[in-house]
Length: 270
Ligand SMILES: C[S@@+](CC[C@H](N)C(=O)[O-])C[C@H]1O[C@@H](n2cnc3c(N)ncnc32)[C@H](O)[C@@H]1O
Image (cartoon, rainbow, N blue to C red; front, side, top):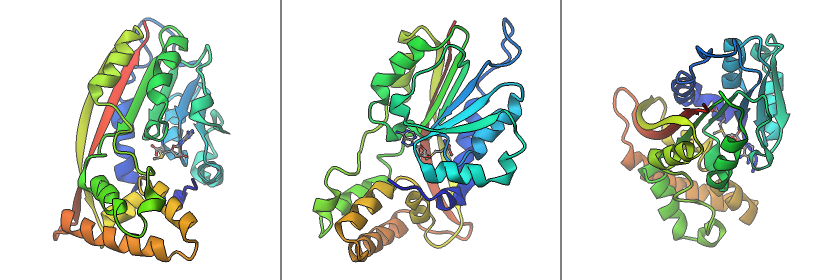
């Protein structure tokens, strides 16, 4: 599936806020240990602007962003704001193939594991392999039951596009906070997990559609474009979905409120 970094970046402030709330919980330097992490990893780093904040925070630590999207990494490579951080690098790779190295002291993954169906099985293996004293911090969207996603699926389930979209949009790709907390505690981490619903105020005529076009709607758009390369099927589906979103998320004088639930888990290995 192709990503469009510029479309993804359109709501950079709102998309970035959970990242900052997440990494604020990583309390490094620890009182008992090393001054700086030996290595920091950002799994599913996207266009790299948020990864860069980790490199700015830990300037003496190598910070590597890993992503499977060549488009996202090309965007990171072309971003002049990232050029003056010599400790920052990026690597093309699949999260499914990654395992922590013995010096990976901080692992962050923000808004990426929902794309990796095997992540619940991978987490215990990653946590087991991480070094003593390391931190693991993850955030995933927890809004797959919200109108934006329920409508995406229900409209997709009937109509001329139904066969093209069959099985494409998942309803349950992530756990609740307690699920991730249990995994981290079972792995011996001192952990906490929580959820936050951000009342995001978005500008523009169809901002919720614009938001999901950058992320959650992409598998459907890819499937529809493959089924009908003329784009007519995609346009018809998007028109129906747009109308439903306008009803579900009415605009006000201030903008459109798009409530967005996110699930967080952060822990440290003793
Ligand atoms: C919603 S973006 C999040 C980007 C960034 N972490 C942020 O918070 O802005 C999801 C990213 O995960 C990446 N991704 C999705 N599945 C992946 C996989 N299996 N392996 C590596 N990266 C993946 C995508 O390419 C995309 O850049």
